[in-house]
Each structure stands twice: as structure tokens, then as C-alpha cells.
Length: 454
View 1 (cartoon, one colour):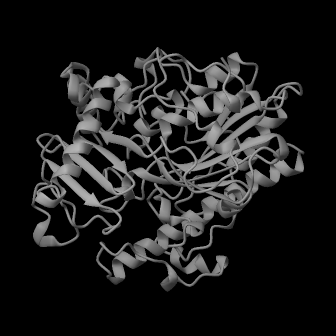
View 2 (cartoon, rainbow, N blue to C red; view 1 turned 180 degrees about the horizontal axis):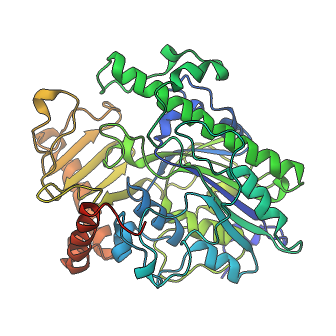
């Protein structure tokens, strides 16, 4: 039976454009109110569509987060796909295949799924689809990917049959490091002085930390300019009115307690969506949505079947609703985790997390040294459990897991997380760890050899 949201869709199938940046926490975009760096194109999508305040990746690591988005499954359900530098098995359907089967012209530019291996997967192309990478920027700046995402998007559209809608993944490699050392000098191009770039308060407020943030900020604004170019192409070709535009990032910013971490700065990402004529503009939605929800949402919007084993849940009804704030009261929590991101045994980044409106609960499965900026604490190992009252402590600096006053919240979230892990077959709960253990050895060996075959 079709959902009420699907029944309300126009007969003409919409185009879908996904613009995904690389390593960017949600507060980096100015529309969220913390950053002073103007990001006018992301803000435009939010202004003319919907801004999500609680969007979460499935994993704070490139390949598993992108795999979750492409398949609609939690990263831990994807076997070798749960690891960066491994592979995504072909038995898991991915979005470009689903859209092509539904009559769409599909492709990607820039960074698709990865980094990882293609050959062991049984796939003949990147899980993000057919690549459009041949056109490069006329002027290439240090630290900026030479691939011209907008020019390749235009090339993709030129090759599209006139009678077909399109699905396109535009994968920016910005603001991923390395960053040019002199980027901070170029911020004036965007009307901002270097000293206006903010640094999270849990980081040392030193000149070196601030300079790193300033160099990062330039690449973030550069990525926003690329988004603007993509939107202009849609407008010039008369396609914007028929296109669902989704803008997000794969995981958090590459700073301590962010990327590769299960704190909010690691797994909470910026997300705005516009669909002129279909989405009521100017809405700000607080419902929790996860990368695993993206695939069923896009497919339902296109009127295409959703693979039966998908774990995510479409939020098309939230998109098409009229209200702001909490729209679907059942979307009041989300889960995420990580298995590996370059560490060698005995260090392990493996963990899981669950987040609701007030609390953030984390369970660490392995020995992981703390990455707090205080040198005296860097040798400390993180505790098995972490609990943060995000209303009172939004920067998550006061672990309440051992607090008697918060034991009920800890136990409640632990039970909910484990029930969800069991329902979705997480090896960390089922005990069926053979594939994870083998893959961990495989990717560690690949790292020792310098990642051959990438």
C-alpha cells in the first residue's frame, strides 16, 4: 500500500541531486547560528526548503557512512562495508542501481563511496554509480580537488536522454584536509576576517588551533560556492523546480572529539533539503533522521520500490508536512557507531551510541586513548560507558555514566540501544564477529602496505 506522502506526489518523477561534503560537523554552517562564516548557498537551500537540526550519519568515517546512505542500512549490517578501506559487497543494493532500474539517468562526480577496494566486492563500478570526472577546474588552488564538480554535473546532464529524470551524487572532497597553509589570508574574499572563525570551546584556544580552523573555513566556504554553481546549473536548465536537492556531509569535522568519534561533533551533520513547489519553504525540523533513512526517502519520493531489507525509514512525510519543530514524534532518537578508522591493535575505536533529545549514551568496546587536548590526559583510556546531558552540557564534557542521579537514563538508553542492535543484527551484540575480525586484520594489513590498489 502506498503511503499518504507518496500518494500526494505529482505524476512526473522528480530529479534528485545529492551534494555531500567531506568532514563537516553540523554547526559549521552559519544558518545553525554558531558559526560566523557565511555559507549562503547552504543557507539558501535551508531557507527555500527544510533545515534539519538533528541529522546523523551512521558512522563518523567516510566509507561506512557513505555505504549506509547508499544502501539504507546501518553500517554494521554491511559486512566488509562497515570498514573504511575494505569493500561494499555487491549483494547490498545501492541507490544508483535502484534509480536506473526505475528509468533514471544516474551518476556521480568527485568523491563517491570510499576510500576502499572495488575488486573484492563483485561490483564493476563505484557504489555511487557511473563516474563523471573528466573535466577539471580552470584554476586549481592548493588543497582543492582539481575535479570540477559543477562542470561534470553539466556534462552528465548533457548526456542525459531528454525523457529521463536524473539521480546525481556530487561528492566534494572539501573541507577534508590537507588545507593550504595560507588559506586564512583568502577569507577576506568572502567578507570575513580570520579572527571571526570560531573554535569549539573544548579545543585549546591557541594561535595554532585558530589558524587551523581558519584554513579549514576557507575550504568549507569554497565547498559552499561549488554548491551555488550546481544550483545555478539547475536554474539555467529549468530543472530546479523539478529537483529534490539534498545537502549534507558524510561525518564530522576532522578535529579532536569529532570525526572518528561518537560525540555529536563526530556524528551530527548539517542537512538541508529543498524541492520547489513540493516542500514548504522556511521550515526548521527537529526530528531525528539518519543516513539510513535517506535511501527509502529518495526512492519513495521518486515512486520507486524500496529494497525489502532496508533498515531506514522514509521521512518523506516529514518533508511534505507543513509544520516546523517536531513533526513525527516517533523520531525522537537515533543510533550510530564505528568499527575501525586506521588504528592498530590493541587500540580500537569500536563503539556504538544512541542519542535522544536530552541524553547521549556511548559504549566503547575497545581500548581507546583519550584525544582530549589536555596533554596530561592524552594517555587516559576512555571508559566503557559515557553519558552526557546534552541540554545542560551541549559540548559533552561531563561524563555522567557513573552518576547515581543519571543511572536510570543510562540504563534506559543502554537497553534501547542493545534492543536495536539485536533487531538489526549488529555483530557486537549477536557475537557473530568473524567477518568483522577478518576485515579488521585485512584493513590493518592494507594500511601497513600503504593501501595498495586504491
